[in-house]
Amino acid sequence: PRPMPYTLIGMSVKPNCDGVGYIHGIVWSVYDLPMSGVVVQAINSTTGFGPLVSLPTNADGIYQMIIEKDHIEGLWVVQVLENGQPASQTWGQHLGGGCVNGAQELKADWKRVFEIN
Image (tube, rainbow, N blue to C red):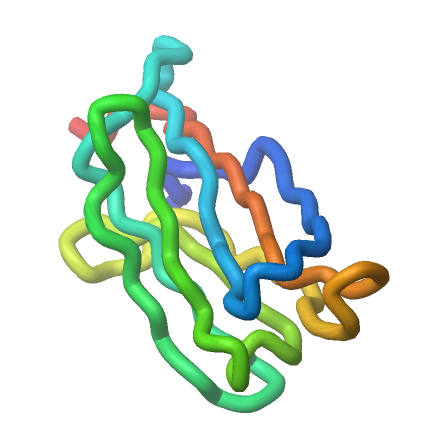
């Protein structure tokens, strides 16, 4: 199997009461600098909603996807894409529940672990 050039370096959830959900994070280069132009995909594997695909990361390495209120609940899996193909393993986290005790926001940070020649 082909090794994946990106790895998950941190994942956390938190509640928010905005009425929408968010999947966001930062992508870091092999040199620990923010990477621009990286795309992340998210799919709700419980409901089949998605995939949501982020805009390319900005100059600070930040990406964000907004989840409409009706689609927050379920197991969300996230993955880095390169040229439309998987460039990391998939990782998942449950979202949903009330705005105070639930989780509507998923932060997933990634790091490129090697360059492909």
